[in-house]
Image (cartoon, rainbow, N blue to C red):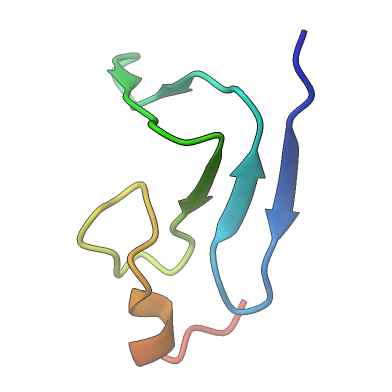
Length: 62
């Protein structure tokens, strides 16, 4: 099994590195193109579940 790391970025997204299978709430696979992806934590991204930088404008604290 491949190594996967999840890094919590201060006031930002979750940075996931490694080969993963990402699924939505219905169990459908979500395509990931890169070995490193950023997942939204602020809820403001227009590219959910991926981060688009909206946390900066929203002044997200987390």
